[in-house]
Length: 114
Image (cartoon, rainbow, N blue to C red; front, side, top):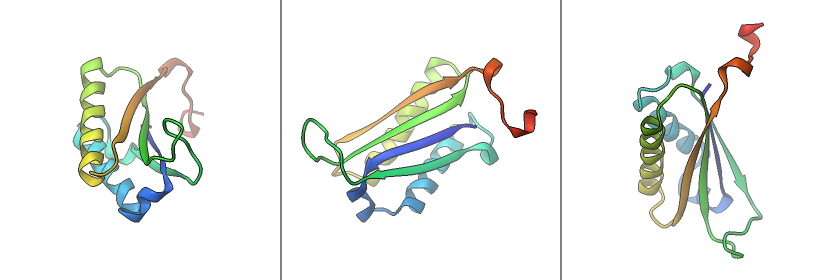
């Protein structure tokens, strides 16, 4: 916890590889001060086939899944920081976005909680 899942067009990987993207997203998440660094998980899902507005236009969308308890302002600041970082890395990509979804602590389980 938390998870940052980056869906993107595969062609953006010609500008930065997956390792670089993962490192930059990890760094940005950690810099937010909202998470313990060792708990941050990041992964990239590149797509070969996709449509944006019925065209094959490059895109990046970050889906963040975090434990409930952060304020709306904290989540908005996190989204803004991520979109800012990705916009700096990919200035030619106009479709960059992020959303944050909360995990409910009461229903969350992982191996350490067994």
